[in-house]
Image (cartoon, rainbow, N blue to C red; front, side, top):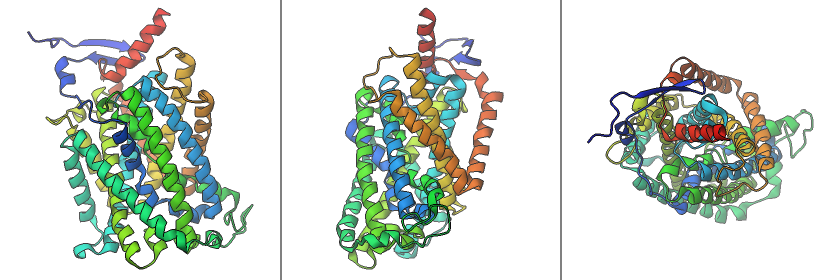
Length: 481
């Protein structure tokens, strides 16, 4: 006998209209569970970010000098550590493919959940476009088979890695883990050869300006520290995507927190290594304008060429893994009705087809601008905004639902996440300081998505999607109390 409902039930709650969809609806929108343990999840977290060690961060030297970027990096590392600890708690309590959107939906209702999910989606859709431009630059510098940087390079990497993801999560995660391991080996090779070239005087070779507080350590003064913040974020950008794998993980309440914390610890070490050794080898001034900083830091020679090839693997690792993140965020928002529902349909391998393809097409179009630095700042704006909303979610859930089962609890509680919240707010403002055009365009896109929700999708939500059910359960418990 069929279990499908002949007439879907309509309900109105929290200012939105929702439908209880059929079992068949959810059956067509199911991910493969049990595909990853904590080791693969930690690898996923490192994979998201590893490209940031190979390129992008060094442009912050032009904004704040080595000292300014150093201060910004320490502050941002503290923010990410605090945020990761908060997300580890929320992911253990609410393991779902929506990640930050799921947490915010329960804490702040449909509008807060949607806003958070869209901010994350903007970050993950634009970041691969920025990385694609870096990949093109690496390919051009390697002169592989005479290939030069161009749209065909971007098209090739998008098509190739979307195709791999369509084979299923288990296969994709294992491929990501292998590529990430290669990228980490490249960083070790870089460190071994760069340490002999290190000279502390090279760190402060940018001439001081006449800005307030300017010195050899802070050549652009105190304001340079703030301007360097978006580039410091590139050391850790997207690690918050680990909880998006919750529905495909084994024992997610244990393995997701463990995976994201281990990944954060690894990234602190790798980020500090390149931050000291690359400018220390050839100078902060030279690094501030480099599109291939680790290679240029080593100069000519076998080690430089080897790191150049492996650096391409590092960029590919992040490009590949962030595709995974944007597809799962799109999948979760679509399954719940916040985005068009067709985006969440999965194939026979349990991979969300259109959730991989549609953001990929948008990212490819953005990559054609060739403006990696601008795209980086746009991605950082989306990321920083999502951090603000996710940390508010942690604080709200701690205060409103103190008895919620939490297999992992954040050390320091809301004090920890309040620190992350303050820094994240400053990071949002800093994106306007560095590139107001990029930040303004991203804000406009975010506003357009909010209009779509207000006009259309808030009247077409799916009440029995996992994220909506989490929120409905919380409301029911509060009503009983």
